[in-house]
Amino acid sequence: MTLGPEQPAASQDRPPSVASPDRPATSPDRPATSPDRPAADRPPPPADQIGRIWVLAFATVLIPGILVFIALRAAGAPLGPAGLLGLLVMLVSSVTYPLLLKRLGWVGRR
Image (cartoon, rainbow, N blue to C red):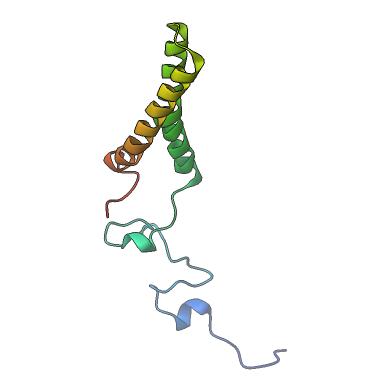
Protein backbone atom coordinates (compact mmCIF):
# COMPACT_ATOMS: atom_id res chain seq x y z
CA MET A 1 0.00 0.00 0.00
CA THR A 2 1.46 3.39 -1.04
CA LEU A 3 0.33 6.80 0.13
CA GLY A 4 1.17 8.65 -3.07
CA PRO A 5 2.49 8.19 -6.57
CA GLU A 6 5.73 6.30 -6.81
CA GLN A 7 8.82 8.45 -7.03
CA PRO A 8 11.47 7.53 -9.60
CA ALA A 9 14.89 6.61 -8.27
CA ALA A 10 17.29 9.51 -7.71
CA SER A 11 19.66 8.27 -10.39
CA GLN A 12 16.88 8.23 -13.03
CA ASP A 13 15.87 11.90 -12.80
CA ARG A 14 19.41 13.37 -12.63
CA PRO A 15 22.16 13.19 -15.20
CA PRO A 16 25.12 11.09 -14.08
CA SER A 17 27.41 14.15 -13.79
CA VAL A 18 25.33 15.67 -10.94
CA ALA A 19 25.95 14.50 -7.39
CA SER A 20 23.21 12.50 -5.77
CA PRO A 21 22.96 10.69 -2.44
CA ASP A 22 23.90 7.41 -4.09
CA ARG A 23 26.68 8.90 -6.27
CA PRO A 24 29.13 11.46 -4.83
CA ALA A 25 30.45 14.36 -6.90
CA THR A 26 33.89 12.77 -6.96
CA SER A 27 34.37 9.33 -8.34
CA PRO A 28 37.31 7.29 -9.62
CA ASP A 29 36.77 8.67 -13.13
CA ARG A 30 36.65 12.30 -11.87
CA PRO A 31 39.11 12.94 -9.03
CA ALA A 32 38.59 15.84 -6.63
CA THR A 33 41.93 17.46 -7.40
CA SER A 34 42.08 17.34 -11.17
CA PRO A 35 44.35 19.98 -12.73
CA ASP A 36 41.49 21.54 -14.72
CA ARG A 37 39.61 22.58 -11.56
CA PRO A 38 40.32 26.04 -10.10
CA ALA A 39 42.14 26.17 -6.77
CA ALA A 40 39.06 27.60 -5.01
CA ASP A 41 37.07 24.45 -5.85
CA ARG A 42 39.68 22.06 -4.50
CA PRO A 43 39.00 20.54 -1.11
CA PRO A 44 41.32 21.37 1.79
CA PRO A 45 44.44 19.22 2.13
CA PRO A 46 44.12 16.00 4.10
CA ALA A 47 45.01 16.02 7.76
CA ASP A 48 48.33 14.27 7.22
CA GLN A 49 49.56 17.13 5.01
CA ILE A 50 48.59 19.66 7.67
CA GLY A 51 50.87 17.83 10.10
CA ARG A 52 53.69 17.91 7.58
CA ILE A 53 53.35 21.67 7.24
CA TRP A 54 53.65 22.09 11.03
CA VAL A 55 56.71 19.85 11.14
CA LEU A 56 58.28 21.85 8.32
CA ALA A 57 57.52 25.08 10.21
CA PHE A 58 59.30 23.78 13.32
CA ALA A 59 62.23 22.48 11.29
CA THR A 60 62.55 25.73 9.34
CA VAL A 61 61.89 28.36 12.00
CA LEU A 62 62.14 27.10 15.55
CA ILE A 63 64.94 24.54 15.44
CA PRO A 64 67.58 26.80 13.77
CA GLY A 65 66.89 29.57 16.29
CA ILE A 66 67.21 27.21 19.23
CA LEU A 67 70.40 25.69 17.80
CA VAL A 68 71.96 29.15 17.35
CA PHE A 69 71.02 30.05 20.92
CA ILE A 70 72.48 26.80 22.32
CA ALA A 71 75.67 27.16 20.25
CA LEU A 72 76.21 30.76 21.38
CA ARG A 73 75.57 29.87 25.03
CA ALA A 74 78.01 26.95 24.76
CA ALA A 75 80.59 29.32 23.25
CA GLY A 76 80.26 31.56 26.30
CA ALA A 77 77.98 34.34 25.02
CA PRO A 78 75.77 36.05 27.62
CA LEU A 79 72.13 35.08 27.83
CA GLY A 80 70.72 38.32 26.35
CA PRO A 81 72.77 38.53 23.14
CA ALA A 82 72.48 34.78 22.54
CA GLY A 83 68.71 35.01 22.91
CA LEU A 84 68.45 38.02 20.62
CA LEU A 85 70.60 36.40 17.93
CA GLY A 86 68.51 33.22 18.20
CA LEU A 87 65.37 35.33 17.80
CA LEU A 88 66.90 37.09 14.80
CA VAL A 89 67.56 33.72 13.16
CA MET A 90 63.92 32.74 13.82
CA LEU A 91 62.67 35.96 12.21
CA VAL A 92 64.83 35.48 9.12
CA SER A 93 63.74 31.84 8.93
CA SER A 94 60.08 32.85 9.13
CA VAL A 95 60.62 34.88 5.95
CA THR A 96 62.08 31.87 4.14
CA TYR A 97 59.32 29.48 5.32
CA PRO A 98 56.61 30.61 2.82
CA LEU A 99 59.19 30.55 0.04
CA LEU A 100 60.03 26.97 0.95
CA LEU A 101 56.35 26.00 0.96
CA LYS A 102 55.93 27.42 -2.55
CA ARG A 103 59.09 25.73 -3.80
CA LEU A 104 57.95 22.34 -2.46
CA GLY A 105 54.58 22.84 -4.14
CA TRP A 106 52.56 22.63 -0.93
CA VAL A 107 51.08 26.09 -1.54
CA GLY A 108 49.98 27.31 -4.95
CA ARG A 109 51.38 30.40 -6.54
CA ARG A 110 49.23 33.49 -6.86
